[in-house]
Image 1 (cartoon, each protein chain N blue to C red):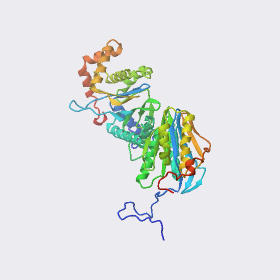
Image 2 (cartoon, each protein chain N blue to C red):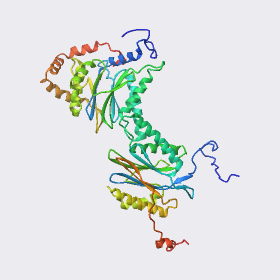
Image 3 (cartoon, one colour):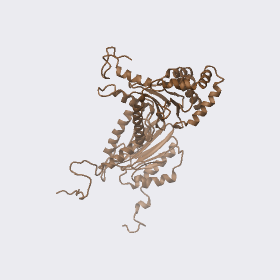
Image 4 (cartoon, each protein chain N blue to C red):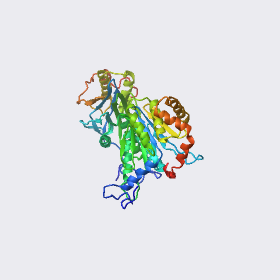
Length: 245
Length: 273
């Protein structure tokens, strides 16, 4: 007997299910990516976890990769779809380099290309199950944008995916300002990642911070954040929370 | 030119290693009325001579805006030119939609050349009978290219194509070293003077020519007749104080009928303007 009830309603336009291969649910997923603009470029942080449902299965997943000379891509969501996107971008950058003509695709162009890809896949009901963060610097201009699996895209001074939107963005809205130094930017990102570590159950304490400037991309070695679990609120979390036990 | 047994279709080589059909296509470009282009580091100016069939008709459009940062002037079969302009506009729009960034003119020109090359290697096609002067901007600044029916393309500081373009080329060869750092207005003036060379005696007025400009911070646009006439008037006055160019100017204003008569007697084929 089939326990996964996948019956379509009578008026469904999706066609017969038997011969289609569309992404229905994600399997191995990465959690939040957080990024901000600072004085010299973009700083981006993501942990190295690949969850398999509620299991923290893979602990060495690089969720941020350099793209061409000018861009850095971070992804949350389905890891295999992220790898597919890297393949698309590999081809894109290759053909761009083959022109060999002094023109190159900058972060804005890569971001818009990804938006087109994500939106078109969503229209075919076969999404790439990712939320992407694309940052870069070209000719002194800093660029930071995000695209979701349904094709929603925008640019901002700081962006985040998944839980990062709820936990990290409020911190960034309060503490971010123009021309952050590198040290201040890293401190701010670590502040966000620490909150995510405490509160996001799919987060693991092994993260990388990536930096992109006019000179190029640097992705740090993985490291852990110091945590403190002796807060009194952690000791007795239910105290003061109405209706919980 | 010459009739021989190797010129029937484009896929036949001659024993000397020539494709006559392609060469004949380049002849069509030479029959079209003149188009010129010149560039500085930041601006490109395109100009062309507009000859209407009769006083009753309007003249054919020979300069096309392809995108805010690219424009093209054609000489030869204008119908072919129109079709290629539509292709260029399409490519620019698609690139702009996908990347939210202007298509670098150097890449568009290569795509155009590859398209022209296809027509030199299919027995059921013929080469495009139009030469294109493509003016555009990319990351490295202002560029001017010439695309041939043969599928070749070249980059130029200044160039002229079409009938009596040699006169314009001679003028441009004298002046081109100043173009890189010239101001936008000086560039337009040089374009008008080059066009005047191709008119060979006829008065230069804004009704016989079209000028278009594109530059860093200046989207491609065709200058309106009033502005062009003002610029002509401005340097015609100055021209009377300069040597040989002034002599041509004065002669032209004294004998306009002769100039027009010579033009009508050329016997240009209707599609070739």
